[in-house]
Amino acid sequence: MVLDVEKAARWIHRLNGKIQEQKQYLTDLDQAIGDGDHGINLARGFQEAANAISANSYQDLGALCKDVAMTLIGKVGGASGPLYGTAFMKLSMAWKGQKEIDREALAKGFKDALEGLKMRGKAQPGDKTMIDVWEPAVAYMAGEGPLNGEELASVAKEKMEGTKELEAKKGRAAYLGKRSIGHIDPGAASSYLLFSTLAEVIGEGESA
Amino acid sequence: MEYVSLVLISHSKEVAEGLKKILNQVQPDVKVAAAGGADGEIGTNALAIKEAIESVYSEKGVVILFDLGSAHINAELALEMLGEDKDVRIADAPLVEGAYAAVVEAGMGSSLEEVVQSSERARNLKKMND
Image (cartoon, rainbow over the protein chains, first blue to last red):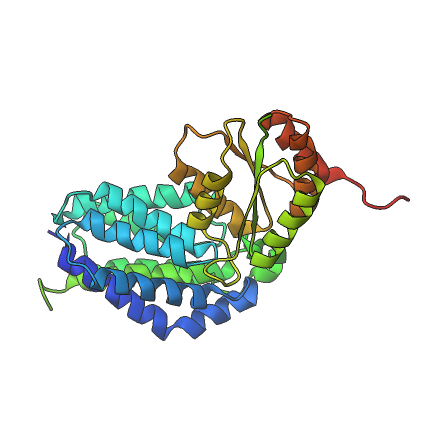
């Protein structure tokens, strides 16, 4: 088992905490190359998502992820709401009826989520988006060796930092063209938080 | 007579509502729904868009017009949540001019395809004479 309902709930709460903590940082990144609402929108959405799952007890990872998805879709006004909402919806479909999952199911869920993100945002690796973090992080999860939380987090961090050198091809940042170079993509930064908190939770004991 | 209906998506509630008023005056027979803003703030919301489509749904079809980036992403998500058996199309058109052309075309009893085409032609409309 790498993830169960208790750990998944801990993940969402941890991720929400990080987003609240880094709300200003995410907003600053978005003010540089976007429309400046990324931190505010995600802070609102994940706070609501954390509240929603606290109000329930779950026997099913699918149900938990679905509640997160619907909250993000309903509460986040920018592009990040439907994008993260789609990712959690794909996780919920992949993990439907499962109380706990092994690494294979974890990787399958995230592969589906990545496909959902590509379909929804029509972005490819190199476009300076969240995909630049998701693609390598998911490839690591689906890889051969043992699943190591620290390695997963460091892959995500390195790729997030790598978006600094890229020229934006999607979203509001694409209007800036070459002027987007030199800034970390805000969606890549929030995606790093998603994978680093997941990595922490996976690395922890049953109920730390 | 049955008409194609329209759904207007804007990041601003006021833009969507205001445009709806213009269209209602131009052609009161065509049903128009406004889905502007997200939870009272600037943004767009897939659930609100889905409800707007349902509120004016016509067997003849529904055309969606949107303003910027994430409105398109949310429109596609709303369509997915509605299911595939619904005749709903997203027009690649400027919001105000496209919606104006769409309501005129829809008011003539035209088909879904014709309404989409008329609104998309508004992209090349010159607003001033040389």
